[in-house]
Image (cartoon, rainbow, N blue to C red; front, top):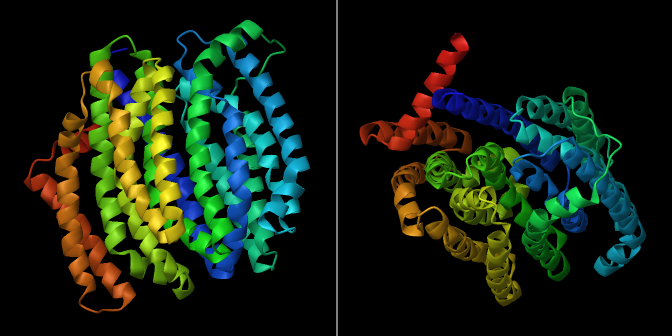
Length: 484
């Protein structure tokens, strides 16, 4: 395969992954707006209390094995089948544990009504166990078109079910069934469209080999997820359900945008890097491209959303959700630097250095927990502000190994993202001034959004932004290929 063909394959798979994530997140975003208008903020706080525990247990579903299958050069059916049966057994055991422990979890929050919610929502663990290795197979073989149909089908079906149940007065159960329905349909469609099936074989030796790589990623993911959910647990325990709902809703908007793009890049980048793991210069080139391009795309979105936060929330969610605006602005800046973290960590994983991955996670989470314990007494908003500081620290830590592995130091990475971020900040300053005119929300946004787009794209053309030209040329090449 020629270099041009490889680039087209990567871009094609990135595009399908972006369409899948964009379509799913777009539908989810619209549904969340409708549900937020129908349901009280306290109900969102209630469901967040439940997902604190299910999110942590979800980490065990993968156990780092999915990534190990993608990274391994010669993974075969025996590897995939072994991990499938192991994961399925793990998920069934975790569900049984959660089912038995649900009354104690409800007692911890002093909310007995959480018991049935936990038991039903935790069924997503079992469903994920059935789907997980199919996802790894799709990623390894760059078949991201399959994700598009599976994810969009599940999301659309769940949207109908969730809105209907909320409208009929089912309250928090609308959110629970929506999640469960989405996971089920997603899994069914993926199994129908992906040809791989597990065989009745199992190898403890293969499991040991894969686990020797994957356990470090599991431990890293547990630290990361545990820390993230610890924030919600603290807010839910020390403050009100409404505080937790506003915190989460403020996080949701920027998180939806960033993770949509980031997951698309991440899914394609890891298998592509893994195939080139013996060529450090090529991995560096991919890492650099990922950092520059994703930051160029995300920076205007995050800064634009931050300056337009108040009219956006008021129009989409109604005035009852306006207390989430300060959180939304804080998280926009916290997520702005997310692409550097992802690209650096993908490079480390692709090079087979999961030992570095775990060491970095231990250092980062030590810093994160110290900051969290120091700020939790001052309210959820101060806790949110602390994420900006910890993200910057984490960014420098994640970049450190690649100075040695790829000869790509942190200062060089900052230099690569500086043009896009600087242009986005200038655009944001102008867009924010429009809000001071005092027009109604609709008219303000109708002026702000096109003004921001024109300023950013126009600035990119004027200053010959390299990332802009790369994205434009890649899109042209892909479209030209499709025309043939």
